Each structure stands twice: as C-alpha cells, then as structure tokens.
Amino acid sequence: MRRRALRQLILVASVAVGIFVLYMSVGTRFVSPLDWFGPPNDGTHALIMGLRLKRALLALVVGAALALSGAGFQALLRNPLADPFITGVSGGAAIGGTLMLVFSTALLSTLPLLFRSVVVFGGAFAGAVGIAALLYTLSRSRGVLVTNNLLLMGVVFNFFASAVILFLKTVVSGTKLQEVLFWLMGMLSGTGVPAPLLGLSGFLVVLCGVWMTAMARRINLVSIGDEYSYGAGVDPERIKKRLFLLSSLLVAVAVSLSGFIGFVGLVVPHVIRLLVGADHRHVLPLSALGGAAFLLASDLVARLSFPWFGTLLPVGVVTAFVGGPMFIALLARSQRRGGQQ
Image (cartoon, rainbow, N blue to C red; front, side, top):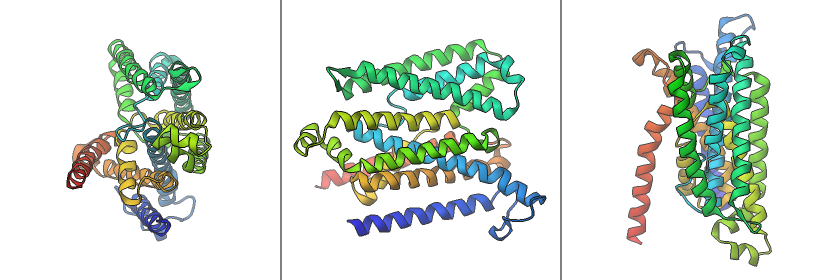
C-alpha cells in the first residue's frame, strides 16, 4: 500500500509540475521555460515573474486549501458529499467580504489596489473565523461536538448568508454590483493580492496541511466511528475540534483570497480516494497536490478562453463546468461497482 501511495504521489506531483510549466509558458504570448529568467528589465521577465507566477502561486494556494478542507470536512461529517462550503463558514466569509466591498467604498477608493484587497481579505477572513467559532459553540452539547447539528446549522446559515448578500446586491450601484458578483463567482488575480499576504496565506495552508497529516491516523479512527477511537485510546472530541478548526481556517483563507470556487474540495478528495484508498495519511497530502493542480489547470483554461469570449471567465465557472460532470461520473461509477458487489 505504501508503494502504491508513493507511486501515486509521484504521479500527482509530476502532473502538477507539468501543469505549472504549461501554465507559465502558455498565454497570449508563449514563453519557453528557457526564457523565464531573463534580465529584470526585460518584458518577458515582467510577464512571467510579475503576472503569471503570482497568479499561479495564488491558484496553488487556494486549490490546496479547498481540497484539504474538503477532505477534512468529509472525514469529520463522515459524509462523502461534504465540501468546504457546507458548514456555513464560507457564508460568513461571503458576508464579511461583501460588506467590505459595499460599505467601504469611500475608504477603498482612496487606497491603492493592493491595500483594497487586504481590506476585503480581512473582512472575509474575520467573517469566516467568527462564524466558525459561533457554529462550533452552538453545535456542542455537553462537551460533545454533534456533527448533525453542525451540518444543519451550516446549511441554515448559508441560506441566511445568501439572503443577506441578495439584499446587499439589490441596494448597490451597478458598478459595485458587478464587482461583488465577480468576487463571489471566484476570481484569481495575482496582481490584486500583495506578496506578503499571499506568502502568509501559503504558510497557513502548509501549516494546516502538515498538522492534519500528522493527525491522519487518528482521523482514520474518527471517520470510522467514535467507539473505535475510544477503543484505541484516542479522544475523538479533541480530534473533531482540531479537524473542524483547521478545515474552517483553510476555507477562510481560500474564500478570502478568491471568493467562491466550487467543486475543488468535493471532487479532488473523491478522485484521490479512488487512487489510494481511504487512508488519510495518503489522502490529505495527495488532495493538497491534486487540488492545486486542478485549480491551476482550470485557471489556465479560463485565461485561454479570453479570445473566444472577449472577457476573462471566472475560474469558479470553469471548475463548475469540469467538476460537475466529473463528480456525476464518479458517483455513477461507484454505484455500479457497489451494485456488482
């Protein structure tokens, strides 16, 4: 099993590297990898290092965060249909980010573009963390995290968040409405995210991924059932708490950076489980790599679509077009295999 997981790790990593090279090379102007590191005053250097590299790194960070959080919530809720946006944390981020976009117009208009993105990121991140803390507190009963309550409250709060955002969209100007819509649909813009903020976000994603992978053996027990955890001497409530907090933090980072990008956290962990099984020691790191590669490839498609549509498609639209049919195919395949058994 370890050899199989190692082979799949090498395979996924190789695919991710290949997509990265293609992403950096292809666009309105093709740039050979041999020409990436030209003189600093060269136009090619500005295109590669100033535009494509920042956007690629943003896609890698967000994709890894979404896939990791999806795998974490699926283990926590013991539900393969769970995704990063199911618990209401994303709703909190959406409200926080939208409020910053709508009611900080005067402030944002006086700030440089990079500082505006920091304000929006801060609002979305604060909203996500605040709602995560609230949902966790309300879902506890006698010191036990009731996952059914967490799921129901998350769904209800997402409906509430949708109503709040719909109200805000009806009272703002047309220009501001378009800005809000594009943010909510999921956009990657490396030029709009300061390098320190992107670096901090990447550090948080790596930290959460390493922490979750270190807990993988105990996550395996929790995903099977609490009785198995107690039998192995593991406190399931402690693991559930950490898993919820880490997964919520990953959602907060992803939505704050890019808005809503669906299907990455739902589809990628499913594909990884088909490749290596349900052991989270393999599922978590491979999901991070797979999510990064999937979102990078989707954003490449979004960039290359510009000549056909005359506008840059939100990457969330591409992931929905690709991820929706892919998930239906995976679900149909698993049902056929279950029926044959």
